[in-house]
Structures are given as structure tokens and as C-alpha cells.
Length: 300
Image (cartoon, helix red, strand yellow):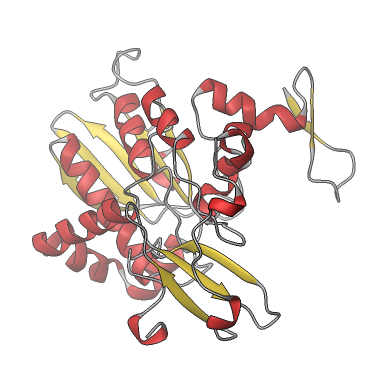
């Protein structure tokens, strides 16, 4: 149980029974990601109790919510994204005020987009009706990927739809079957390689992930995981500095420029040098379109 600190300037939480420095370990032991409470990414997938527990529900909303969250949990976007899945038209999960709302009906699922809660609620607009869970995943995923590719930074999805129009979104996602599959494929490719935190084997894969011996390795998605003691290089048998592979000299990277470092396995790494002569690195893959961050013209 947690409550905010009395000081507004302090971001720490006071927890009864759990110390703040142990929270990351608690999440890890539970087999769950710690979430992205303040990130511009997937926030939550809210569900009702579903057909397993409610006599009114026509679809298994809990399973659909799990599938959506496991498919999108590591996704970054122009602004926060919230989803909800209701098992029946009574809409107990408030799907009508989410960025993507899914409502179960007798013949399948209805998808609504462009909703928003907050001080000024925005009602989501009807997007499409589908029959199967696979179609829900594809349509919802393609819609989110379109927002990732075309949305303006810090612009909520409801504002993005208001700017480009819902008809434009429907043409890109619903009327173009090939384009929809391509959007869904690009989203899956962008999130590929993120181990599923709900399974023991995947957590083991995180522990065995190779350490990149560069000056500072700070990919955004892995930042919270690398803080975990199990992911600390000193506790994972990382080679000594004398055994590290020499990449290049710092002077080989011009100021405000970058170089790509190929790895035998996994995505390449982009190494940057700032105007203050600092060096940092991240995976050479855009989280939105899955394109390389360092273009060929910049590292010839």
C-alpha cells in the first residue's frame, strides 16, 4: 500500500512494508513489468470481469485485455495510450472514453477509437465491427501503429483524429487490407525482441541478454530493467574491461554525429557524440517505424 510523499517536490512513495529501493525487485519477483506510469507509451488495458464471471458478458474480455497488453506493453508512442475491453454493451470497463475501446457483442467485437477521459471527456467514435479476436488485434494494432507513425509528438490520439479526420484513418486501416497488415507487421517488428515478462523463460532470457560494452548504454525500453540487480553487469559474469571489444576511438565520431556498430546477434547499436563531447548509445531502431536511427549517409 502506497501514498504520495508529503512534499510535492519529492517523487518518492512511502510504502508500508516495502522499501522504495525494493520495488523493482518486487515487480520482478511477481513476474510483471513495473509499468509505464508516466511514459508516453501504453499505460493500461482495462477490462471488466468478462464472460467467465459475469452473466451479462457475451465475450471473454479478460483474455482479450491480456492479449492486447502482452502485444503492446513495450510500445512507445507520441503520447500516452489507454485501452479498455468490455465484455458486453453495458460497457463496464468504460471502453467509450479510451484511445482504443473494444466492446463485446453477440456476433463479435466492436472497436471504438479516439476517446479520452480526464477533465474534459471525449466520447470515442465507432471504428469497425469484427468477428474474431485475431481481427481485433490486427485492427487495433494497425490503428495504434498509424498513430505512432503519423501522430505529432505530445498530441493525444483524440487530437490527432480531430486534425486528420476519422475518414483518413479508416482509409489507411480499414479500406486498405494490405496497408493494415503492413502496419500491424511494422508494429510487431518494432516490438520484436522484447521478452514477455509474464513467463519465467522470458525473464531468464532478460538475465542472459548480452551486455554491450560501450561508454554508456541507455536504450529507453531497457532502462528500468537494467536497474534490477539481476541485470547488473557485475552480477552477470560480464567480461572484464580488458576483454571488451574495441569499437572505435571517440575522435572517430565527429561532434553531433553518430556511428552504427553491428552485432553478431540482435539489433545494431547506434553510438552518438554530443556537442559537450559526451558519448552514449542506444539500439539502432526507431521505436515508432522500426527504421534505423543512423542513416547510411551519416556513417560512411
